[in-house]
Image 1: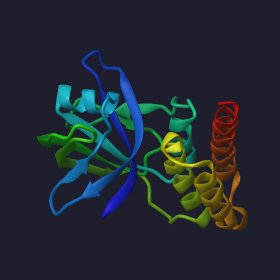
Image 2 (image 1 turned 90 degrees about the vertical axis):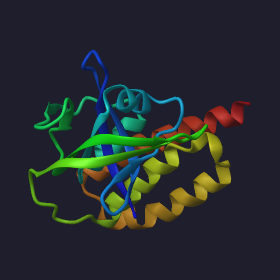
Image 3 (image 1 turned 135 degrees about the vertical axis):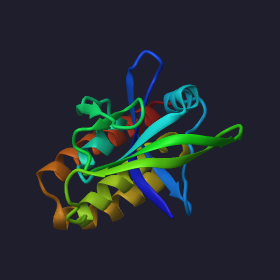
Image 4 (image 1 turned 30 degrees about the horizontal axis):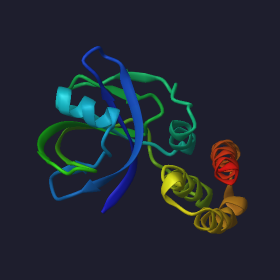
Length: 188
């Protein structure tokens, strides 16, 4: 199973990095697969820890892809790290082993501490659409314009039916990024 989460990591200077990722859930481990090169990869390998933030504010997912990364943090309890203030829950992870790969190494992590901050009240279809659009935006350079447009039109159906203020803001950021990409491709 893959869970869409926000991974926070810190470097040796204490600077926080935030990244949306699909984390693989195994029996007793979480596996993070950052692309090379990546700040997340460097930070986790360097300090051996990370935080998985479970959130329902899809603006954070969209914001990470559109240059909006100032969401506020609080200290972790068991590791050297930071938790998103908007996280509904978080898990503090310790790196156990690395399975090397030239593109996406697998970082096997053990959950050493989990905290629930607020109840999760469920996702609406617009939140799903924003998360899927964010994943699409993370792959713009690898997809054809036709694929991007087809996916966005499908996602727009559920989005239009259920979006609230936060989802509309996040969607607008992502659609602006997609439009910029389309214009850049057309200029080539």
